[in-house]
Length: 537
Image (cartoon, rainbow, N blue to C red; front, side, top):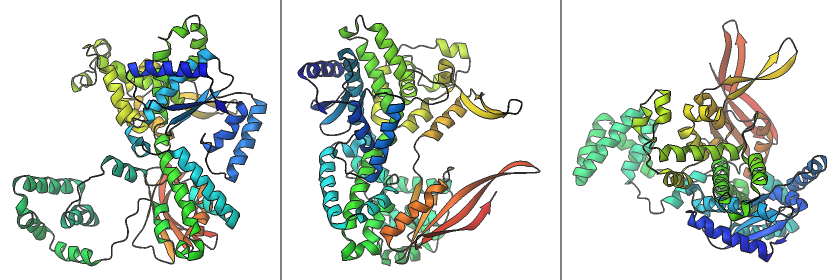
């Protein structure tokens, strides 16, 4: 691995000027490296962070990558990491004209990293430098504690995809957030929820509170809470009890709770484990926004490499080569989802909608297909809108908002299903649906969707850690539960219990049915047990 030569660096600087003139915003300082295919294979398990700490699973991925390469030689054109300064790696087999296109692609990624709101908490961090310090810390601990360090890493990594990303992001976006008065906070955020008051009633109460606050803020107690007392005579007593309770320290996720409350980690001989868990958790927070913006990020980079490279003089006489290369990257493929292709087409679609003034309620009311196609107010706000996308949207928001029937019809998209061909006795693929809702559901279904798991503070004590999986339609992957819970037991020090929902599908005389079973897993002394709590059809 070495820095790119002076000629390539000059091309990169020229690309930066063109990108900035087009509206992209990024830090001017960047680092670019040439890497071999071997470097790519070795860096890939470390997510291309050269200074990432060493861990045994990385060696397995390297061996796997070597085997894949021997069977089918291939190479990635580039990769870029969100660091300060931004670092990018280019395959040493790339030609100069290819690197020019790839430079534009990389600058699209850098612009996305440095402007999308989900990455806000990474904007002032040098993760590569921090990773080097973390690597040295783990090497120091490994020299003292040996293989036990890897046990702690493995236990913590079992939970690093459910770190409190949104809570940390909220702090970054709203550092001076106004805190509610204790009584108001208790009423709206605790009391109404514990009393199972329906959402519409909660909304009415909030509206009433805001109205009094705007007109007569000094009368909140005498007016608003007098009414609360009439409706809920028990409120005052519960609020007094709440004030006298010892409040548990707020935590954002399971790993953070274990860090501050584990009986095992409180022992002096185990304090070294906290440093490792903190390192793993911070890495999880760093990578969390990338997991949630894969389609948008690749689509944004693909949009700009196409937009800028086609207008670059270097493309002259290379049009056919570029068309082949670009099609290979951004083509819609049958049977699998290409994030470059979907992201690019959604961004282009939104630009077209905004340019024609179609992002309005008046347009949404039009049902006639021909009228919708011809509708064009020539507002020219396409670029403005896609920069707004880049700043504010995640993959889920982009798909949920803009995958509609017009988009489906425009690109001839469909959902593929599988079925058994009884005559030929084989599995076959077929077009299951061409509806936007079905395609949207499929796309959302394949997005990385970390489960929502929290600590049950009422049940947790020194002897047992109670975890609650908040079921949102997707069950946990059951084969991962035992090993993950063994790891949690290792760093907690006592029994670990997990309440979750398992989906059982079956068939009876009435046809197919689905049953949601409430189950509890218990890990104690490395032995797992499961029992049914409740079955619901």
